Each structure stands twice: as structure tokens, then as C-alpha cells.
Image 1: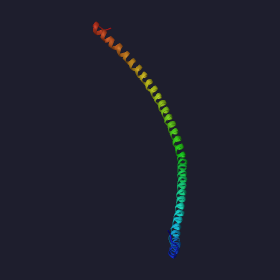
Image 2: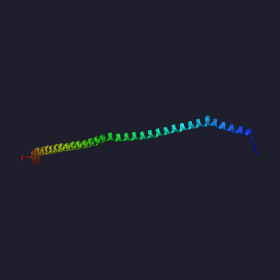
Image 3: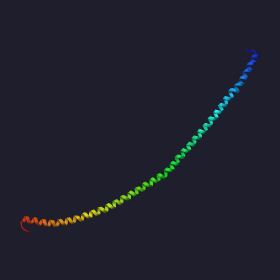
Image 4: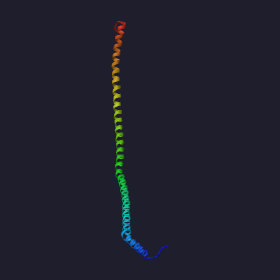
Length: 141
């Protein structure tokens, strides 16, 4: 069985002194370091979260700003394309009108030349027919 003597009391005092020293020299500094580390990690985590939110905000602002800057450019592009289409259509219509006038002039000129050639050939036909008749009949007609 356990004997209660002075050594047990000394051991008990040793244990209390050891607990006091461990508490003072080991547990408090370690707990203090752990608490400090938790605070540091917490503040870093908060900073990371704030930075993420700020980055998301900047990204939204960038996307919105880009869209706003692109809109006038795209509108200008559309209006320029519409204007170019309209200009090309008007140029095509002008060219068609000019070609139609030129075609009418050419047709008129061809008809005029055809009539003059036809009349010249009529005169030649009469002359040639007279010559052929004279040669066939061997006398003058």
C-alpha cells in the first residue's frame, strides 16, 4: 500500500513546482505564439478575401468599361457599313444608268450605220444587178 511520508510530500511539491515552471516557461509562451499565429492567419485570410473581392470588382469594372468603350466603336462600325452599302448601291445605280444611256447611244448608232450601209448596198445592188443582167444578156439594159 502507499505510505504517507515526507517523500510523498516532496514529490507533490516537486510536481507543483514543475507545473508552475512548465506553465510559466512552456505553456503560456506556446499558447501565446499559437494565438498570435491564429490572429495573423485570420488577418491574412481577411486580407486575401478583401483582395479577392477587390479583384472581382476591378474585373467587373474592366468588363463594363470595355463594353462601354466597344459600344461606340461597334455603332460607328455599323453606321459606316450601312453608309458604305448605301454609297455602293448609289454608285451601282449610277453606273447602270450610264451604261443604259451608253447602250441606247450605241444601239442608235448601230441602227444609223445599218441604215446607211443598207442604203449604200441598195445602190450597189442596183448597179451590180444591172451589170449582171448585161453580162447575162450580153447587151446593155
